[in-house]
Image (cartoon, rainbow, N blue to C red; front, side):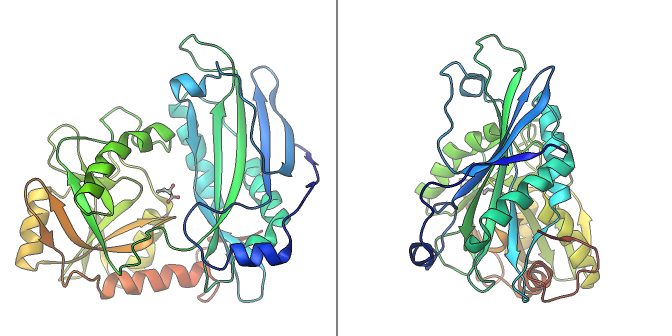
Length: 359
Ligand code: COI
């Protein structure tokens, strides 16, 4: 394991200013004092691990990330537990997925213990920024990008891995109990054989224009269909999706290579199974979805992800028709599963799967 060098803050934020800044938490607009950076050079490996002040990173204008988008990231959270300590949820799963994304983007792997240690170092330095459990959590954003100054199209030879942190509340600012989705029938997010299963910035860049169309139609998030038949539900711009039926079955689209393998998605399959639901990974078409919602066979649908946690979907709009799900306000299953998952994350329910890592 690399040794970290610590660079002190020249002007840490006062406790009073921090408390004021954290009084109302949104998503991803407020940042903590520190960051971790680790450099990679081909032939030398990972080096220069630093815990230092959060500050701009100088980049050569020819840095490969600025031209060919060699960039990957993760999202995970640290939670304040009832005894005041701090833990994160399945950071090893994020470390594994980070390296899977790295493989797809032809980037170097980061040892998983170094990924987790970076999070430990950052959270230890910024522990005062972890919100109280009833206010929110500390969102951690590890990412890696190509820094080599080179305009040829090939994998770069130099990278920076970085972790920043942001105290957050809910992801959706509407404050509604359920969100409205825009189904994109024209634009797709990912194609078979593409980068859809990797957590790379490019996938999110591709979602922005369709997301803007959704916003123009009064929606909170865009939902993408498959790229080949334009028929099968895949995922939202930034989260996975699940459907709840009257017979206690929950369906989520199978991981087909163009869907992000969400850690929340995976955990919910276990949590829902334990709560007595049958979770199936099964293709689900837009037409069937509309029919099931209109007939009442579909009781609920929800978005799931680290940022979204579990967010009920109340209404769906699209160029091929609009429909409401259940009473349009979310339902009992989403509430039950959210309570079960968040209960584990906040240390209020037993962690029977060893998912929580004390930081
Ligand atoms: C996450 O849930 O961590 C994500 O990366 C999704 C993004 C919309 C914030």
